[in-house]
Image 1 (tube, rainbow, N blue to C red):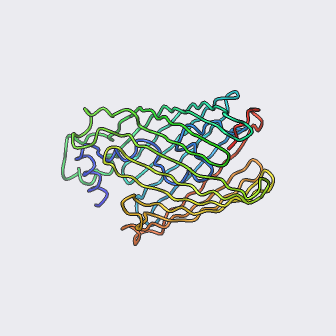
Image 2 (image 1 turned 30 degrees about the horizontal axis):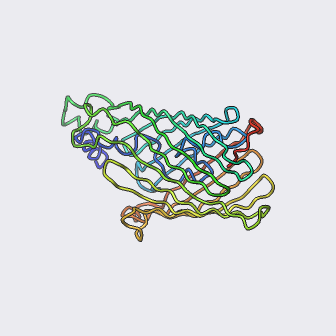
Image 3 (image 1 turned 45 degrees about the vertical axis):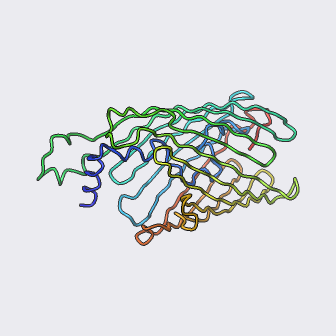
Length: 318
């Protein structure tokens, strides 16, 4: 009965839940050495094609909790540009969204000896949001409503753009997504018209010596949603141990709303490795908000392949 109630509430509000993202929900997938998911400027950085597949299951133990799958790939195009593509599917109760983003990035080398680069990127986004009619069948059997006559769905088209600055081990990226306002004629007047959100991702890769096998990487990821001004921050730390071109890493992430620093949304460990062309990562998040007593946390697994090494001779690695 709860599922029916929430679905009816969603329709009554003019499908207000479409404002939840209208893009791939940004959780911690980017920390699995996959920042291209949150910023098109990372497309084509490196000398190979990168493929990453992620599965995220949130709030394990809660019926119809959010569940997200994505696959992304990016590759160098010539010596100064890159292309990337992400496909995703996201389900949250009786609401579902699936979509894709196609990205282009251009990389400028300021000083190749100091690893000094500036990159620009843009993406085209397409998203289908859907509410299943099946959730209403029991209710409609005794309460017919002609306005509920099909699986409600809508397709959104949008864009994102950003820049990325890198100098030695330091990196800073800014990204604005869902740049266009939505078509307000098909939504409730009570729902915000702006879907724009802004991401800032910054960090530093530190080695005591240039050839040291141990690399430390603190980073921060900030999200701001224009429609209601809410924002959140991830504080992350990773330690990576290099074995020639292979590496192993472990880390932790702490996410909080920016007006509640001491009351985190979640916190959790992460581990991963790259062995040859194969990549694997796993993260676990302990949920610390009101739903914590009803679930056993969230799990994410990322599998990847790095193929076609040497596709470019431009020094623009990451």
